[in-house]
Structure formats: structure tokens, C-alpha cells
Length: 236
Image (cartoon, rainbow, N blue to C red; front, side, top):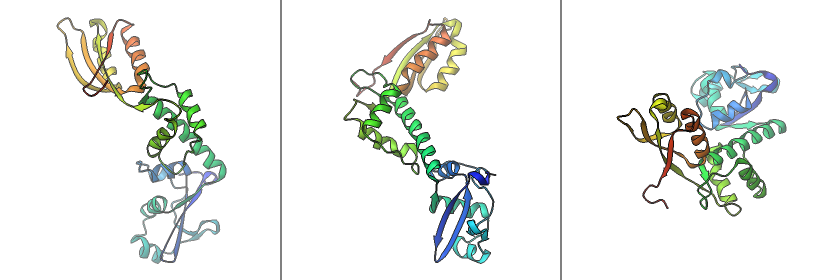
């Protein structure tokens, strides 16, 4: 259960009835965004209130009339996802800053500068977001806000989302241990084991992660692997 000291109120009104639950603000927002969150990590107390500040519990009759059940977890989930979540100013600020960092990381990982084909550093994206005065909404998921942010910063920096295919050849001595790590990094479009024991694969992943990929491959092969970008049909 969540600490009552950190809990906020989620409210829901329907048909003249009023219901409240005490919840962890960040986990409640994650639940609203559709993530699979255990209710034990969301609820501060497994109770449905008519007025949480007074400790006044909702009646079973009212719960059945509105929700068709008296199960606290099921009702709380509806209150959180369909009702209003009331954050303190500090909680709102903390969640905004957390999502701003996630937004920057998401764009940096998936976007490139189409003029150079290289990723933008996170600092450049952060500066562009500040210049464009992009307001991060604490009640919306990062995925919902990515396109809004991209539209806002495109006049400031050349940027687009793109995946890249990179062919890699790992020498025999490093092939076995490297193959698994490379597979986990991205999608293997094709792969082939050579007669000499070396491994060749074509890996697809967000273009913004190219530097991370090269660092991984160099570390696994001690700099002996070969890589090259594969141009797909329709790409320049």
C-alpha cells in the first residue's frame, strides 16, 4: 500500500453520487495511461469514500447503483481512469519534470538530423523544447506528447523519426557471445553464420541509437567487428 502522506485524491461523480479514493499520484497516472499497474501500488487504502477528508465511506448501495459491484479494487480503477486526479503543485511539477526527461530521451533515441543522418544530442533537443516553449502535460503519456513536441521543434532544428538498418560482421572469436546481445538491441532482419564461425546480421533499430549500437558492438568485439548502414528501398 501507498503512504497516506504522499497520497492524493481521485474523484468521480455520477448520478448525483460522489466517490473518492486515496492514491499514489505517479502510479495513478500510469494506470490512467493504460499501463498494467497492480492496485496495491496505487491505493493508499482499499476503501471507497464519499468524502475522504472526513473519512466518510460510500454506501454499498451507492456503489452497486453506480459501479454494479462493491469490489474496492475494481471501483477504484474506474474512479482513477474515468474521474479527476487532484495533484499538489509540487507533485504536478515533479511529474512534469520526470515526463520532460522521458520525452527528451524518447526523441533522442528515435530521431535523427536528416541533413547528416546522425542523432541529435539530448541537450540539443532539450534546448529546442525550451525555445519552442513546449509544455509537458502531467496527465498525458509521453507517447501522446511526442508528435506535439516534434511539430513544435521542427522549425528550430531539422529532425525526423527514422529506423536504421545496420549490417554487422562479428569475427569468430566474439561471434557466439555477441550475437545474443545484438539481438536484444534491435530487430534482426536477417542473419547468417559463416563457415569460419563468424556471424553476419542486419539489425533494425531507432536511428537515434546508432552511437549506442556502435559502442556495444565495439565493446563485444574489442573493435574488430565491421559495420555499415544498409539503405532500404524508399530511403535516400
